[in-house]
Length: 610
Image: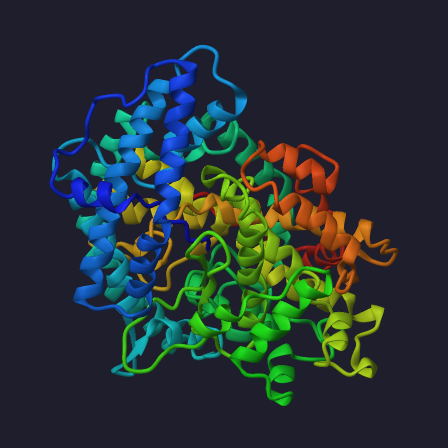
């Protein structure tokens, strides 16, 4: 996740809290020259104190209490008001003839740059930010229960990956979804209504259309591309689903998990069934499934602590010739969960001053998942620093999928040979080629398994925003989408008062989710391009470009572009193509897919239509 906070000058900040909501007065003439002057003024103002909002959000995320909630909501209200004012004016300037390409691009970014847009109605921005802050804090303080004991969210997530008792898994799943999600439902519906009113004032049909407008194409074109990419990977996912379902049936028996139809969501090793790697050992076939080592065990055996995980991850980037992280990163980051206070443990990467005040916020545990997550989060930080010389409105990724894909494609290079290079694995234990199915299955349990979940989160939100999913049907629609795309179903019947979407951080956190689906496609395009640059000639899934400075130079050239060019330009600079495609991902997993088809022969694959 990337944090980006817009800010205003102290004078404007002080005035904003006391003046009427927005001024319709245009500060510059409605001309090409006036538009350019407006953009320059806004960028200077936003850059001047862009860290003040970030610091309020940082403190609120790492020290949750009533005071920090109020600070975050206060600054969030001001920034939302200013953001809507700028977006409203940008929409008017965008209609002017004779705009140069740079000014037009920045106006479009400004117009669509808000995640949630408050309407100009007095008090609307405050109400919107109060609700948004409250929802995020509710999530951060949320707890599951197990055998009558409270379990913090971060610990509950970890337990879902290790517990094998289906009754205890059901307890964790149900209590987390009931305790965290259900209380948010009414506030969430109110927030949607306010945000939609704001989006309409900016000329969008609804908030979902506004989100889909941020990809250098129309919302309709984006939706079509989104569905095309899913169609390219759906057969691979269905083969994986069929194989894993059979493995879970063999382990748990028919009474818990049938070998037909949906998979019970809590049996997949993850609170949201979005990644299945934690149950790999339950479904890995004897022989072919044994990859010869366990990354979590390697980390423990080598006495690697959470800071050590961060140091190893940093070394990957520096091995490609990129600069080390600043000393302040190690002083200011939240790498482990602090004791004695509530925090948001969901991993995120920050650049508070838009230069080099880089930080991560994690509650790192010494396990394989967090080892990969750390590589991912540092990808955000290196992207943030690479484009820090761009004008303010270009301080972002080519699109949000790019930002998520950078660390992920680096993490794909966490191969056995890479583990040897960083001293975690003895070379004599590198699995031979006859273990490739196990290596690929292990990857697919996370990468492929995630795809339908990555797709459906925003499909649900787009339906909520456009009104096709009404509040009374919020949960039913969520369950049906998970059944339709993932082929998973809740372990217990969900009542009308449930709000299971709220139990996923990105819903109360209002983080658009299409970026993660796109990132899972893009990371394989990036990875294949990097391997080609490095001259790799073996199987794609065994490629590691650790230590290749040519890849680092080419990568940094793309990262430095930030949002200054349409994303196809950035994609072409690194991969040589201007179109997102799942072909590289399908190629990567081709040996596994052929093997799974053999294993699934004669089985009743698929599931009922939701």
